[in-house]
Length: 548
Image (cartoon, rainbow, N blue to C red; front, side, top):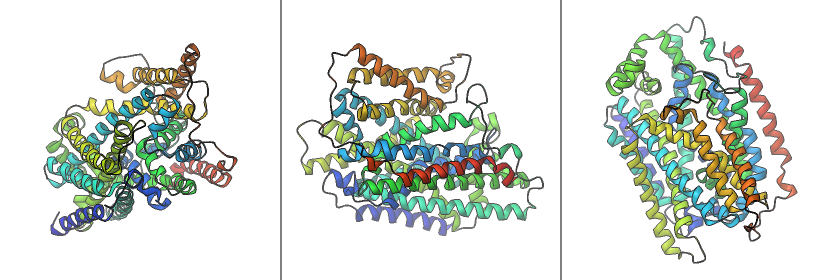
């Protein structure tokens, strides 16, 4: 990087600090955590995608497709269930939650079940999200260190401190508009990498045999059971549906964006946009991975550069694998792009990391204030509410930084445990909200036992946990199935235990206007998303023919 690249990065940092100052006038909880419930569908839609399509995706998705052993275009199967999940959230999840007027979605759970149910979900969300985000920040920081030759301590602080400052000042409005801008920068970076990668590939004579056939297959009709059976059609559709329905509808990080919308029509539009736009964006990720992975095969010095960088900064991985695949995109940027564009792409990587961090910090703060300080009959004054809210932003920002330093570089098991917890928890969370909306038979005892039982059983059968604790049950289940098994287990146990404790009173939620109306069944949106679901399946099936 030269002075032009560093100038672009500095300008980017100053801009976001200024944006936090611009949105600094927040008077109460709805201003600070829900943007005054005045946000439009366009920035919210970009913010939603930016949070999900993080810096890890920018770096790891192309590396998985183009370089990682066993990788390829099957990464696209992660997107198959998104349109179906958006339909479910539009009709089932959003009407009750939005009409309830809550800030922390776990407040809704307390109204229907109990304080204990609310706190179970809240605490697990806070711990898992803070640790997971810390590891994400560490991963990006260590990769930036490898290509920029700047100590990861400084890259962590650059990512974290700037994000904390503008999140602290501007609240949800700064986070959402920051995410929207960062998503645009990120997508521009994808297009730049794709263009230069293709141009360089042709300059080196192109691929004589085309893209590797084994990397072009998307759809594999396996059931995700047994060694090597991953990314199968059925687990990605069924497990993916429950994962995305829970993540977008029942995870505070995403649900808080939906609750920030002006009205339900705005939410439907942003969910429709998200259901339609995610697949094209990820398709660009994947094609970029194919192109840059192809460049490696015709430019041996590119692979040598990746190997040398791996040996210098990741010696243990160099000994095991020879290369760290996640370095493919950063090394490509530094080796082949002109100055100025290098700065823009580094900003793209920083943007993706900062969008995920800002969303996490804001959501963790909202949950902390609402679930621990503003709960009960006595509410905080507006002044005290804002004081505690801003203090919580700083607190959780510090926790994320600390987890990056303490856990990010220790052992891979930490990352594996966090991923395992995420995959086993979404199913029980989704069931909790659905039963809160519709069941008149499940009490809080049944729900609490259902959540805990489902999580524990999923952990036992998680191949990740088996590997960590050296347990061999004789078979492997692809982790995405755990989102489905979590739903089934939590549902069955909740009803059985509630029947056994039938004398315990089942609380109602009559004080919330949550009734689902006939108008909530949105024919136009459902029709569009179902057609799009069919289109992406057919398109994905023919990708080997199209790109081969």
